[in-house]
Structures are given as structure tokens and as C-alpha cells.
Length: 236
Length: 111
Ligand code: SF4
Ligand code: SF4
Ligand code: FES
Figure 1 (cartoon, rainbow over the protein chains, first blue to last red):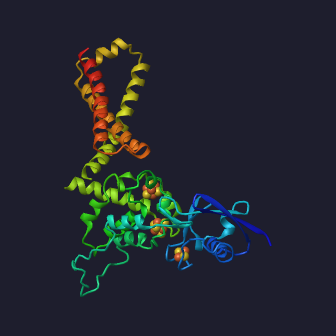
Figure 2 (tube, helix red, strand yellow; figure 1 turned 180 degrees about the vertical axis):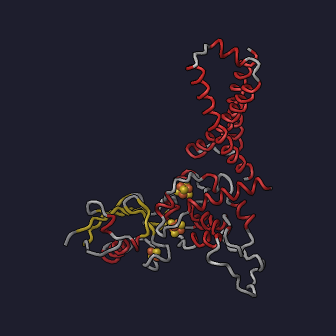
């Protein structure tokens, strides 16, 4: 059976493994096989294996990807896979990164839903009716399927230049909530995402949009934030 | 934060003005040169022309603002030059740039 060459970043060096190349195998399958058969102390992360949890992202041949939904066949170059931990995040060990800064930024961008009619977190008595065809609902729907994988964050140059930069996912979340008519935190949220560490540093290069495995468009979400803040500042 | 938003807005607004102004500037140069005007004739026309003085003063100001904010952003990203001290530096460079331009326009007005 043909062999697949797999290079994995471990600490400062690269370790090399050989794995049988199969007709159907994902990058995550390969990593799991190496961990089970050859390198029991290899650190990596996964949970759902079906593209829902967002925990399995790694850099595969230089490109950040969700490894459970990435077929080796489509990404191997000359029968070789080179795996590294996601860029722009501290490494815990091997392929496992510390996602804390990533999610702290969601909090900084006010990514929590703040119900308008239930400020203390009480459950509103009635369901809100938000017509699916309304433009704001459609804007919100466009960004809602984020799985928090960090692929966009690892692919954004501005994050690598400015460690304070909120990054695409947190601002995509903020834009989703800005368009949620049930939410009451619009003003504070727009303030939180404004400025050099926020949407105004985005270069609109769309690396995030290009790489997002869920086909979301954080770049346009950030443009929406810039627009809202621009007209908001003029109106103040 | 609010200040940074204003910088961003100032850069976009100055860009819109510059897009028009650069066009007017270049078109005027080409028309003047093709029309066979000599340097002396051009200087004579600019003397006492309030309209051109105002145009070039605003042009220089917009260029100073736009350039300095752009340099501030690039230096922040590439060299890590951030903070109040650097902001003051860019403000100075922007005003200096604008000042040179305005002085030139003023000189032609008074020539
Ligand atoms: S569009 Fe903005 S957020 Fe997305 S990768 Fe480019 S700079 Fe980063
Ligand atoms: S926006 Fe896309 S790439 Fe970024 S964290 Fe969400 S799902 Fe992942
Ligand atoms: S393991 Fe859950 S998204 Fe890949």
C-alpha cells in the first residue's frame, strides 16, 4: 500500500511519520492513527469529527483548515502532509493551541446576547417574532453558523501584526448581534469594536472569508461594522 | 477609541477629496502645457487667484492628513510604533507636509 509522509511540528522540531495512504481518509484520521499506533504522547484536539465543534483546526501544508472535514487526497502535496498548530495562538503542546486569547476577544467585542426586554437575564414571557425575510434577520443569519474554529483568526495578517486586534470571528459575532433586533447592547458593542484594535484596522483582504470552512464572510461583517460606526459617529 | 475612529473617517474623507483634487491638478497641468503656456504665464495667472490658493491649501492639508494617518497605520503594523508619542510624531509630520504645500501655494499667490 502506498505510504503517506506526515511531518508534524513537535516543540521546536519536526517529527516524521509514515502512514498507509487510503482511498478515503481525513487529515484528522491520519493524526489519530499516528497517535494510536506510533506516538501515544502526541497532543492534538478534536471532539465531534463532523465539522460542528470547531476544535480540530490545524495548519495543513501551510493553510489553516478544519482537519475532520479535510480529505488528505485534496491537500497532500507529493504524498506529504506538513502539520503545524494554528498560527497566531500560543501553543500548549504539539498541535494543540491555547484558544483563550481567541475567545477572550469574543467577550471584549461584546459577543454575548443582551436581551432588550430582559436586562437581568430573565427569560422573556413571549417569543420574539423576527420575520426570516427581514433584512436584519438575514444579515444575522449570514454569520450565525460560526463554529469558533479559529481558522479565520489564524489566517489573518492583522492579528499577527497586532496581538490586540479582535480578529474576524469576534467581529463577525458582534455584527450578528448588531443585527439581532432582540438585542439591546448595540451602542456598547459598536464602541467595543471601534478603533485600531477593532474593525478600523481590517484591510478587507478577505483571507478570513476565503478560509472559513463554514463559508461565512467575516470580512463583509467587519465592513458592516465600519459602516454602522461611521454613520453613528456623524449622527452623535 | 473615538479618536481612532475619527482618524479613520478623516482618512477616508481626505481620500475622496484627494481623488478629485489629483485629477483636477493633473488635468490642469496637461491643459496648461498643451495650451502652450510658459512658466511665467502660469505664475502670472496664479498671482492673486483666491480660488487656486484655496484649492491648493485644502489639497495640501488633505495630502498631509491622508499621508500621515496612512504612515501611522503602516508603522503601527510593521514596526510596532504605537501610542501617544508616535501619534504626536505623525501629527507633526502631517502638519509639516501640509505646511510645505500651503507655503508653496501662498508663494505663488503672492509672486
Ligand atoms: S478581511 Fe480583515 S479580518 Fe479578514 S483576514 Fe483580512 S484583515 Fe483579517
Ligand atoms: S468565522 Fe469561520 S473560520 Fe472563523 S471561527 Fe467562525 S467558523 Fe471558524
Ligand atoms: S472535530 Fe469537531 S469540527 Fe472537526
